[in-house]
Structures are given as C-alpha cells and as structure tokens.
Image 1 (tube, rainbow, N blue to C red):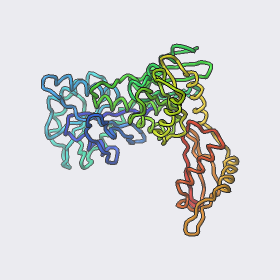
Image 2: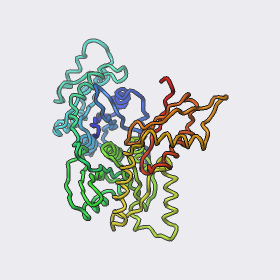
Image 3: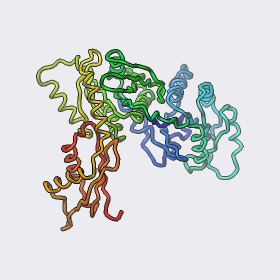
Image 4: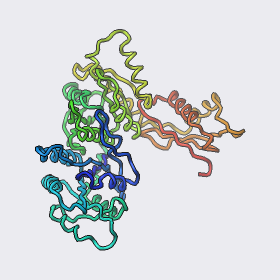
Length: 439
C-alpha cells in the first residue's frame, strides 16, 4: 500500500524545516536549489500512533513579484494540495495572521482537503498565549500551539494529523495482477509506453483510480498474464525548471514504487543516464522491488554493430549499484521489443518472490566455503553454521555464525553471488543478514 502523504506548507521563515526535522526525529539537509541541481531530501517517513506516512517539506510560499502575487501563491499551494492527503499549514505566532496566510488558507479551505493549523514559535511554557486566538480567523479549525525548536506541542500536532489520515484500504488479496511502476525522469516516454501497452495485444483493459492522485492505474490482461501499470507521468520538465514541480514529480515516482511489485526504470536513449534516473532507481532498489531498465527511443539512435553493446556497458557502470537488473532496448513509439518487456516483468517478479529451501541453501553454502575459505582475523576463523531464507520480496537470507565481526562485506558479496549463480535471481535485489550465536 502507498503511504499517505502529509505536506507541510507555509510562508518562509515560519519554521517549516525545523518542524519537519523535529517530526521525523532527525536532521536532514534541506537547502535551497541552485540552477540545475535538485534538492537532496525534501521528504521522509514519519511514524506516529502506529501509522506511517510520508512527510513533505514544501519550501516557503513566497511571491516572486508584486504584480503576480496571487499566481505564485496559487501555484505553490496547489502543488501541495494535489499530492497530499493531509495539509499542515504552519504559521508564526510572532507575526500573527498575514495576508499570505489568508490567501493560502482560503485555497486550502476551498480544496476540501483535511488541514491541520499549526501556530509555530509558541516557545513559552504554561498558559496558551492570547495571540493564538487570532488564528481562528483563518477558518481552519482549532490552531495547535507548537514550538518546533523545543518540541512543545508536536505530539498534539501529530495526533491531529493521524486523526485526519485516510483509512488503510484493504488490498484485494485475490488480485493476481503484477503491479508495475513505470518510473524515470520526465519526457523519457513513460506515458507513450503505457499508451502503447493499452493500444495493442490486449484482452481486458480498464482504468482504476489510483491511490496516488495524478497517476492512473491501467489494468491489462494478455497472453503474458495480468498487469497493472502505474504511470507516473503528468509533470513535465520545462526549459526553466520549477523546483517545486520537480520535487513533486520525484515524490510521485517514489509513491508509485511503494505500491508496485516491479519497477521499470525508463531511460531516454537520446539523453542517456542522468542523476534523476539514479535517484528513482536507487529508491526502488532500497525498497527491495524487482527492477528492470528499459532504454526507450532506441529507434532514434544511429546504430552500428557495436552501438547496443557499448550503450549496455555504459549503463552497467552507471547502474553498478543494481547490476542484477536486466537491460532492454525498446521503442514505445514503434512497439519494438515491448513484448519482451512483458516476459521480463514476469520473470523478475517471479525471481523477487522466489523461495529456496534451507537444505538447498546449505548445500550451496558448503560448496562455497569449500571453494573459498571463510576469512580469519588474529587466528580466529569465521564459522558459518547454516543459512536459511527468512522472507521473499526480495529474497532475504540469514547466516548464523560464530562471530559477526569476522563476516566481512566482501565475503557476504561472494556468498550472494554464489546463490545467484545457483539460482536465477536476475532482476531482484538480495538481502543477506548475519546473526551471531547467542543473539
């Protein structure tokens, strides 16, 4: 299931970033953009009252010109509204209710989305300051007094947020369709691929309202199986990149990955690998999703006998952190190798769900340790008693050893490769945990 999204909005200098860090429980580097460079982190998981949601820091709503104040406020606020399940409007007790606060509050009120009104910089302990009651004029319900610096009132704020979160809808357990997130930077051809898939070789096609607004889930059934393709397109990169648009585009891709079984990382063959490709692919890897890389617009590339091989080698270097992912060269426009895409999706999904018996794993372990002896340190040798699979999606193996500190990363990687050689685990990350005897 996708995590609900809670957006923190407000004017500059009301303490949004400080509150963001306080709520997630750690300090993240939130910096202003420079041309061509996206912000490092503007979202994080937040846990409260047994609920997990994605908290988003939206940056200050600040008009860039006195002549177009309303348009700039509306663009920032609407972006937050369109992606969030709950809005936290942060205001400043010391400044009182400003004209900008009123403009944003009016739009939030008209949107119909749940809004939690946070009055920040209430740093004194004791009686509620009389100035707090002015914020009732915003018409957004009871204001919650918070000190983002000291942490006062953050529990009450999170309680109010969790109360407004949508209920966790149950997944249809009988649905056997493979959920596929098509991710990548804007204009890589994601929508074109989904349109190609919907336009041919289909038996049953229907649109389902996605839990991520701005994304439409497209159900397809054909000779390869049942699929739900999650298209994350809809936000386009313009010649002058709007930082707010860009970060919401990445956020939507991340939310799509959360819901998916398989991530198809779309690469524009005419542009090659970019930083944003690494960002969204890295998230899919961290979440343990089955992955494959689809190089689109291959029909636009001038080719010779070595073009594909050279391009593949370059991508293998760029995606060295997920070397297990197969690479396909496709054309959404012409339909070239789209059928191969179906086959690969089915394969990597099966590999991600694969379970290997303990007996077979220990046969692999015995063969591997006989071929390459476990490492030693100061005369003490690592002993691996046995290995078992703890879970799947992705495959997670646990090794029980005499001393976890002797289990070097290089030897863990060696054992992972031995498992991959013995079983086809193409397209899926593998997790390997170490447990010391007595733990």
